[in-house]
Image (cartoon, rainbow, N blue to C red; front, side, top):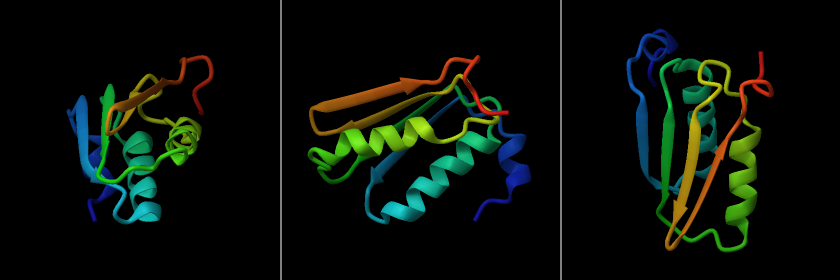
Length: 96
């Protein structure tokens, strides 16, 4: 595990997660940690290693609901096969 203090001082603006979907619950918690702790994060690109089928929209909705405390304008892009879903929470709606 990465200590939160390292994430909060990270200059990373774009983060790609490859092979998402192997350990479903743990991975969503990891994404939540990135959005809560990385203030410079502008784009998070998540490549799914398996097809979520109809569940892809549900997974995308879960990502939209994650609090973006440190990076409120971060664009989260979920890619699975030929489908790509993207979301950004406007600053007026971001969690405090």
